[in-house]
Amino acid sequence: MLIHPQIDPVALQLGPLAIHWYGLTYLAAFALFVLLGRARLKHEPFASIRQPQPWTSRDVEDILFLGVMGVVVGGRIGYCLFYKPAYYLSHPLEVFAVWQGGMSFHGGMLGVLLAMVWYARSRQRPWLQVMDFVAPCVPTGLAAGRVGNFINGELWGRVADPSLPWGMVFRGAGDLPRHPSQVYQFLMEGVLLFVLLWLYARKPRATGRVSAVFLFGYGVFRFIAEFFREPDAHLGLLTLGMSMGQWLCVPMIVGGVGLWWWCGRRT
Image (cartoon, rainbow, N blue to C red):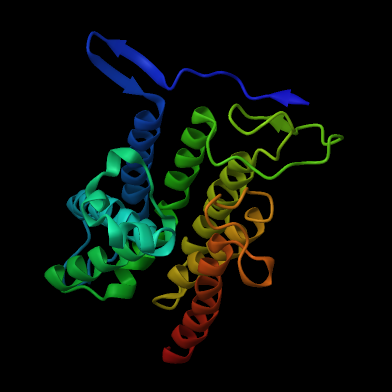
């Protein structure tokens, strides 16, 4: 049985300025997006000079900025709507209290989708082409976020069999060993999804199919990980014994399959 290391959430203290590990993981996610986005410019159709508006490094920077806005706004609103709607309807001003925590990946994804709709229209690019550009650059950012979750000792897993070699006791979660679900999500939603998606996206595909693979892949991997992740205390398990995270993944999986099929029929 392992004990979660007592890692100081503050990575560096410079006088009154505290630099947190979680903030550094966000910076790593942004840097990886820029690095991968510039590499993505070498893939077709983004490398083609025949496009009405050729893709450049400026596009990567603009997409990152809008994507960050979409993640923050969408993630917060999604958390309020999906996980605590009654509470935030009664305390509407606390929707803006982001420092209290509470973000939803699924809400953040919807925020990014809307931000990319605006970007695609402003640049007169096909929206699905923009999403195909973005999708392979996302999983490494998700992996960085899970590293931050593990360092902070948050979003831990369900109670594990005591014989599990990597079962871990988390502070604040009792004395029983638990699944280090942050590590599972890092490996599946981050590393594995990135490798599969990057390899798939390197070759020309029907527009929208890279996005479809991301939707399906993330939905499946997150659905699996939720079997090991402790459900939100105020929600518990919902209908059919599934967590809120799993229910939110169902439309992603179905939508990914449907989009992949539809994009194939268009070609």
